[in-house]
Image (tube, rainbow, N blue to C red; front, side):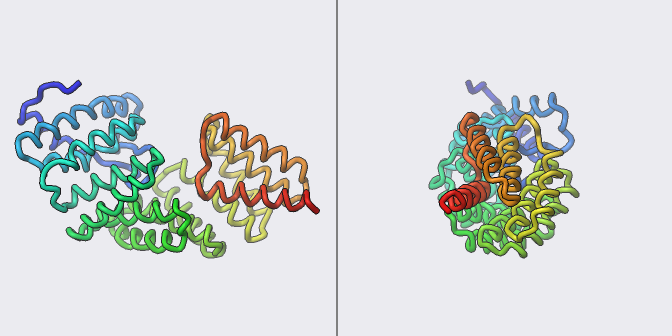
Amino acid sequence: MLLEMSEEKARHMLELSRTLRWEFPTSQGTPIIRGQAASQDVEQATKERESYANAARVLLENGNEEGAIEIAANAWRLWIMARDLDGGRAFLASVLEKGEKKPSRARSLALYGDALLAFRQGRSEESRQRSQAALDAALAVDDREALTLAYLAVSRIAFEDGEYAKSASLAVKAREFARDLGLAMGQAPLFLHASATRLIGDYDQAAALFEQSLELNRKIRDQGMVAAELQNLGFVEIHRGNVDAAERYFTEGEKIAPASDPYSTAMSIINKAVIAFLRENLDESRSLLQRAQSVFKEAGIDPGADDQFEINWLHGQLTTKKAR
């Protein structure tokens, strides 16, 4: 329920939105507000999200479209923190669909936010439209941060479509614009570049890119992505024929992956299934693969495109072996 808010209070909320800074601004996962790692601080910030939405509404009603768009650009990640994708999209729509819709840095950033929220909802076509709109606005104003995120958005859509060469090319553009914006801005563009290169089949180049990504994530202390990149390097080494190296990467990654996360649990089992297959323990590999698929099913989770590729590869290899 929207509460009454004065225009002065709305302008104050705009100023507060300008103080929000994010540790991992290009991450598709849950962002972290700098200096607010404690759970109570994060909880308080997410509770305040409706005040930001209310402030944007008040500014729009008073003819300040620019201020409303800026609040949207600065604050949309609060809805990801609250795991309220529907609410976040409703907030962004209430701002993006009003007014003159003139291209601006803030508009591009808000469009990127809606593209990501739609992507996480599985609404690929809506995400595609918002991603392209974000890129159009970013190109119009020539802002490096907006261009980084917009190219990241269209790269993500190309990856989801299976257009891996296109995804890699767009990720390279995102990396170019992110270069002078701090290490964390290059996080997701580098990850997508590496992931697309891997699925193109250029495993040597993918290994080099994932090594860069691993180093970057260690520097910015994103332990979740460190675990993910160790796993990705393991799969790359599998396809390069380096089973022992792959096992070392998998083992290191499993030590820091969240034990309570069903996705991590399932992929850990997949890792073991792949190693068992390559060591000719076929029955063990089949059993582990079935177990991992059960974990995914029970959790109601679909593997990401890159992980599904490896699952399909293992299934195909086991089927071929059985047929012989």
